[in-house]
Image (cartoon, rainbow, N blue to C red; front, top):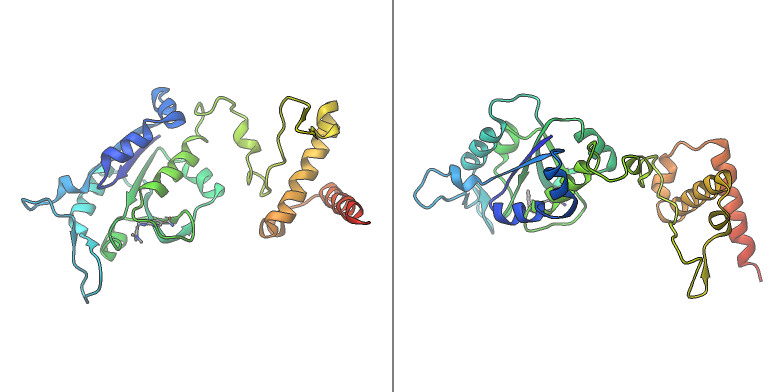
Length: 249
Ligand code: 4G4
C-alpha cells in the first residue's frame, strides 16, 4: 500500500511516521509513505495557502487551489483511490472502516487547518470525510496518523503476530477480555483460576465471558449491536448472576 499525507506540516508528519511499528512496516516494504505540502503548489511569491472567509468571521480558510493541485499530484491521474479528509464533521472512524481502507493499494489523507477547508475541495476531490471523535483539534495531522496506524497494522506482514488483528477489540463487535502474564500473584491479586490452570476449553469460555461482561458494563451500545450465540447469552447471564451474588451481604 502507498499512503500520501497532504499537510502544511510535512516534517512533523514524516517524523511521526519514522517511529515504531510504522517505521518497521515501511522498512519491511509493507507500506510506502509520501508526504506532500500544498504550500509547494501555491502560485504566489509568498506561497500563501489560506485566506479570509467569505461572509466574514474569525480565522482563516484553506484556499482550494494549492490543496486541490497538491492532492491531484498525489493521485497522479488514478481513479478509485480514496481521498480522505480528516474533519470533525466526518463519519466516525471505526475498526470496520480501518478494515475497509486496508483493502486499497493507495490512500490520500488530507489534513485541514485554520477554521477548515474551502467547501469546493470537498466537492471536487474528497471521496470520504472521517472523524476520529467528537472533539476539535488544531489540525488533521494527529487524526491522519491515528487512521494510518489503525490501517497499517492490519496489512499482511505489519505485525509480529499475524493472528493478533483477528482477536482485537471490536473484531467481533465486543471489547477484549483482560490479559495476564507472570507472576501468578501480584500485590495480593491472583491470576484467575481458568487461565492459571490452562484447560483450553475453560480458557476460551472464561475469555468469552469476560469479553461479554466488559462490553455489557462499559459499552452497552456495542453489545446491543453484537450477534450473540446461545452460549454467549448463558455465559453473560452466569457472569451477571455471580456478580449479583458477590454483592449480597
Ligand atoms: C477540517 C475542518 C479532525 C479539519 C476543520 C480535524 C478534529 C478532527 C480541521 C478543522 C480537526 C477529528 C480546524 C476544526 C482540523 N479536528 N475529530 N481539525 N478544524 O477527527
